[in-house]
Length: 138
Image (cartoon, rainbow, N blue to C red):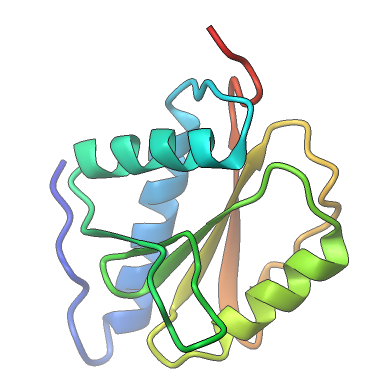
C-alpha cells in the first residue's frame, strides 16, 4: 500500500488520523528485534518505508523539538523503550503544539511502563503502537 501526503483543507485532519491508524497497524504487524531505542528506530523506519510512508527521521519541528519521525508531514512517531510517563507527556505536549502536527503515535514495547497515554493532547489525537517482539535480539 502506498501512502501520500494528506490533502490540504477540510480533509487534512481526517487524513492524518487515518495515516496514524495505518502506522499503528504497520508497526504492530511486524516483530521488532532490538535492545536499544536506536535498534527500534531502525526497525520502525524500515517498516514504514516498506509500507510506502514518506519518512523524515529526527525531523526538527523547532530548535528544541525533534521527534524520532515525522510521517507524511503531519504525524509524529516517537519511540520510547524506557521513560517516565511524565517526561513523555511533556515531550508529546510540546510536539502537539506545532501546527503541522495533526496526530502522534507513541511506539513502545508491548509491556511498557509508560502508564496511561491520553487520547488527545492539546486537541491532537494520540495513538499507541504496542510493538511485538521489542527487546528481543537474535
